[in-house]
Length: 236
Image 1 (tube, one colour):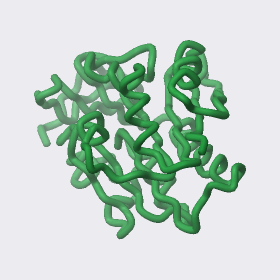
Image 2: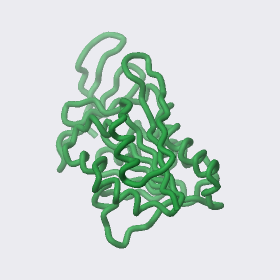
Image 3: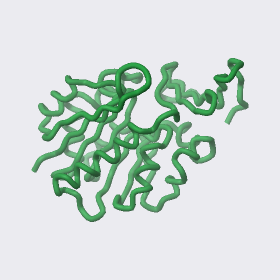
């Protein structure tokens, strides 16, 4: 990890802790006051200021499995995107989950959790025996012909369906991507998708792809539109 470089003075001084160039562009870890934030290709992705929506991503999926009677004794969950670790830590703290797979394509982000300050937010979850870290691109992993099926897919990729920083992530939210997600769920399985803003178009796309019980949970934020979790179920 590189030496911290101060970028601005004052109570909300921004300090760059690490900056790396990878196959998908630049990724940066910064500290702003008491919080950490991840910047990808110059665009803010997430920070550690408020993890409510990331935790809801996991809880809503488990609640939906319970509501529909689809939950096995030890349901499996795939979390798309390690990020700052809120979702993974929340899943690992829930003993009802069985296998927990976490997909993260950025080497830097995995390093920041294993050897850097983000480890405090994933709270040791990477060492949980139920957790498997899959260092790969989510779309490539999902598209594998012999892929494992899960009881829940909880995806926090980019900024959501309507606002992606990396163009290749658009494929996850279109018709082809949703078809792949549908096939990677067990019958009755739940898809939960985090987004930085509500998307009625994505709700319609979910229904068109054959998902049932499509709902959107909103999480108010201090400024701007709410964060949301889109929830849907593979029927049958």
